[in-house]
Length: 259
Image 1 (cartoon, rainbow, N blue to C red):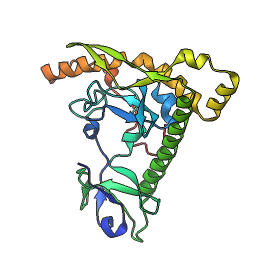
Image 2 (tube, one colour):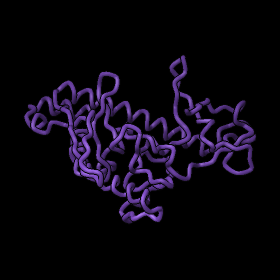
Image 3 (cartoon, one colour):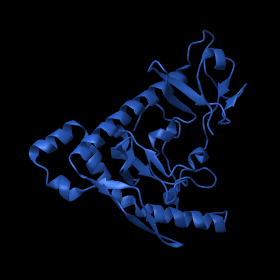
Image 4 (cartoon, rainbow, N blue to C red):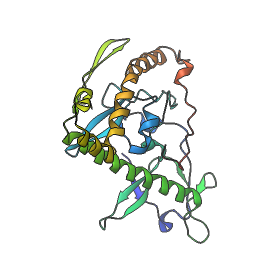
């Protein structure tokens, strides 16, 4: 279990942190909620669904066929294909809310990426002020959280207009067909049947962006079957018979831009 603690000069002034070098920490995430701003880029390579959260919906990247399995993470921790969700790029940091409603930066102290030096990067400078990288991470996480709330607001509008429906999925794998349940999609026919006023309301809420990105991304759902077959090949042969299409050139440590 993660052990998140608030980043503070009293606790971390004499410590250093290392950037993650692989994605094994995300190997059990079958779905990853997404922020509104990242949907256009994510929709180009990842299947996106709507998932239920707090009596509403949020957009989420679909990463696996089992509740605790991320097919986009290879056995050696490589990210196999496509866009890396913003929710993973801030690891091992995250935001948390205090009892006073303030957002504070936290770090998982059991992540194995905190050291007593000399390797890694300092949390604070000689004046106990956050180092530029820490400020950059905080800004990135704040942007992601704000955009995540915008995505949730957009999905609330979609639900209110009745254009969200279950998305039953059957994926072909090397072990046969697999059924995936619990995901939702945009009802394209219902969307096309909305009147102009409703469409304008959805546009103002950012909901049309969610709708069209989700519909566009559905073409990538077969990728899960391909990744499942690649994982089976990895198990049979550690040298991996994996296509170069499963490599990824996205900057792992780019905290500065949400997308």
